[in-house]
Image (tube, rainbow, N blue to C red; front, side, top):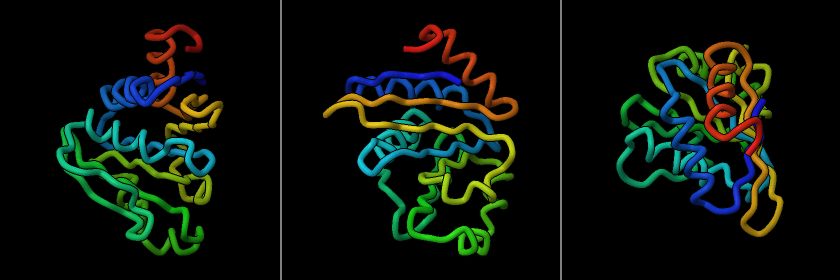
Length: 156
């Protein structure tokens, strides 16, 4: 586990850039936190550092948006669907594919998430300040957390 304190969008972008640099085919990243905590902002920064060109916005009403960068990016927002509806979408095809899955509100579909994944929890700590906790379950996700800890110390 790694805890990162972001004081600005630029700080959040630094974290997103580090996670994007460590991304490989088949990675699954869950984003959780309160409304307005910065999940979509993190997603936009992450996509930019994955080499996605153009506008990346929340897939709230489309559920899944696909982008091409250094790796295919499957950006999902499962806030408005149930776990049963999510299961019917065939998310496992995305989770075990050759791209990277970024799942906003992944806690809604915990039972559908792969056993190994990276979880990023964002908490508002002030008008611009966010406390971001990154937890890796399994490999290579534990290694991502270790790399973040090495880059910024145990906690930033």
